[in-house]
Amino acid sequence: MLLSHWPSLKKWFLLESMEYPWGENPTGYSVWISEIMLQQTQVKAVIPYFLAWMREYPSIESLAQASEEEVMRSWEGLGYYSRARNIHKTSKHLFSLGQKELPKKYDELLALPGIGPYTAAAICSIAFGLPHAVLDANVKRLCQRWGAHEDWTAREEKLWTTRLDSIIKDISEPGLFNCALMQLGQLVCKKSNPQCEICPVSINCKAYQQGRTAEIPKVKKKSVKMWDSWALIYRSEDKILMEYRDSGIGRGLWSFPRISKEEPLPRGWRALMELKPLNHAFTTNRERLYPVVLEREAAESMGTLGKGVDVADHGLLAAERGGYIPGGSLPGVVFSTWEWVSLDQLRDRAVPAVYRRMILSLGG
Ligand code: SF4
Image 1 (cartoon, rainbow, N blue to C red):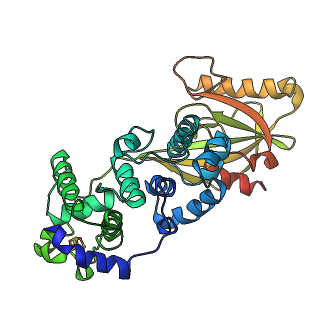
Image 2 (cartoon, rainbow, N blue to C red):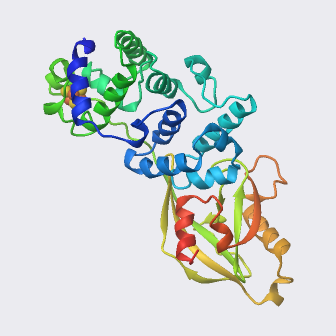
Image 3 (tube, helix red, strand yellow):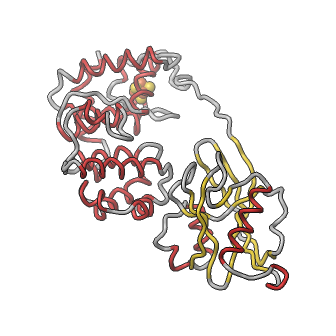
C-alpha cells in the first residue's frame, strides 16, 4: 500500500526536503562516507565534517594513503572513532587490491568492515541505482508508526525489509525513494511531535489514524553509567604528559591520564590550577572530568626529573589504583604509550573533543 503513496512522497521530497552536500552527484565513495558519518551523529553536525573530508580525502586512494593519525585527526569531534578506523581499513584493503572504487554488488559491500545492510543498501541505491531498500533508524520509526506496531522485533524488521524490497523493485528511481523515505522519517515523522498534518503518507498511517503517534515507538529508558574523574595534566617545562590508547575505548587517540575523583592527587605533584569541569559522553557512559594542571614538587624530593621517571610514576599510581597500565607489560589491561608533548605538537594529533577543549583552555 505504501507504493501507492510514492507519487505524493516523491512530490513532497522534490519540493520540501533538505539539500545536503552528499546529495549532489553521489558516488559510491561519497554515499559511503556520508552514511557512516550520519550513524550516531546529527545531520547538522555532519555537514562541515563531510565537506572537509571530501576536500582532504577526495578518493579511496587518497584515504588509503593517509596515516591513521591523520584520519583520526580529521574525524576528531565526530565521536565513535571505530567508524573512522573501519573506513580507513576498508580503503586500504581496496587500494591493496588495486580497486579505486567501491564494489557495486550488495553482498560484496556487506563483506567490507563497517558496512552493514543499511549502508550497503544506501550505496547500492543512491550511487548505483540498484533496488535495495534502506531501513535506517528514521525509516524504521516511520514504518513502526505506519503499521502501528507496538514493538519492533526481528519479526517487524523482516516484514518491513521484505515489504520495502518488494516495493522498491517497482520504482524506477530507487535512490530517490530511499532518500525520500529517510528524510520523511528524519524531518516529518520525528521522534517526538511528528508532523502528521503535512505528512504525504498520513492517509494510511495506522498510528496517526488511531491517535497513537506519541505512544509508538515506546521510549526505552537506557541505564546510564555516571562517574567523576580527575583528568591529570602533568606539566613539565612546556610539555604535558599524554597517553596514547592502543586498544579499547579511545584507541588511536591521545588523552590525559585519568583517575577516579575519589582518589587523592598523585604524590610528589602539586595542583597548579583546576580547569572548568567538562562532561564526556560515550555510548551510555557519562564521565564528569575535573581537569587539574599538575607540577612537580621540588625535584630533589622526587629524584631525577625525566621522561622515564614521570611515566613510570603514573604507571605505578594507576596500577596501584586499578587504572591504566602504561607500556603494555601486564595481561588483560588497556595498553597505552606515553609521551611528553608540546601544545604545538598536539595540534596535529587526534584527541577526543573534550580533551581538545581542555588543551584549548591551556592555550593550545
Ligand atoms: S502520519 Fe505521522 S506518524 Fe504516520 S508516518 Fe506520517 S508523520 Fe509518521
